[in-house]
Amino acid sequence: MLDISIIIVSWNAKKYLEQCIASIIGETIKYQTEIIVVDNASTDGSVELVKGKFPKVKVICNDTNLGFAKANNIGIKQGTGKYICLINSDVEILQGCFDRIVPYFEQHSKIGVIGPQIIGVDGTVQRSCMGFPTIWNTFCRALLLDTLFPRSRLFSSYLRTFQKHDTIQYVDVINGCFWLISREALNQVGLLDERFFIYAEDKDWCKRFWDAGWKVVYFPQAQAIHYGGASSSNAPIRFYIEMYRANYEYWKKYHSRPAQLTFLLITGLHHIIRLIGEMMLLVIRPSKRSYVLNKIKRSIALIQWLLSFNLEKRIRYDI
Image 1 (tube, rainbow, N blue to C red):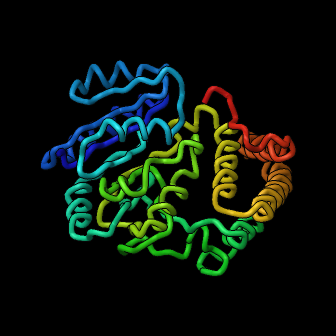
Image 2 (cartoon, rainbow, N blue to C red; image 1 turned 90 degrees about the vertical axis):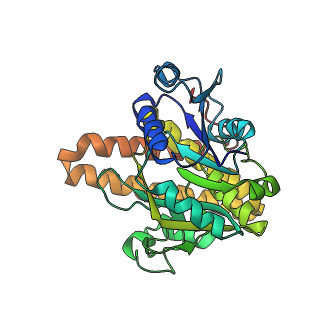
């Protein structure tokens, strides 16, 4: 058995994909690894790039964009490693990442999922953990209470802005740009839920690992850079709506019908508040006109989606 099977799902992210693969190859020399790229019908030459520059990388080409969860599942089924590593195409592995994270994993038998510290392009530590969504923390998010009181556990239990990012700790959710997963745990918990086209699969999967008795760990001694938006930047408003549709799927899966409706009402309230604030900002800061107008369009599109009574349908904008 190989040590690590690394799965990268890509959709029109050529400029990031090359850098991602190169960084992985440079940091996994001491391990027996395989890299599997699952391409979701890219049209930017991603497949040709990988085949030309990285001939040892296995490439699986989908005829259409199957989404993040389903494409990763295709790759996972092909992998044979003791550990499965899911890495976004817009992630760059930093020096020593695998050399630190793998031994720690091997020393703690009940870890199911572990993720490194994520660094932004500007060198700052990004939020890479979050709490499971509840009515309360969703309400706090809507009223911006977590923004006003970022150090409060009471108001910031969803984005966990109070959390220090310099210590190893158990967390509810590791965000899905970099996951290292035990095959033993995976065999018990199962693959990603394919009803989540993109987004919310991280909350769902981590919950399933916890429910099955496996721990989810944040490990800041290993680091990676997340450039962000490699695929979603191709259609930002469409992906934004898809994010909320996926969150609604999560609420449908784990919460009662009244709780689901409450989530939708709070989401509507949240975007009405945002829309009012964005319109005020448009008047106060005309120099930011282009940026604010994009935010306004996004909020309006989300409110229209909420009013469409078509909440369960995936947004089919060729994403």
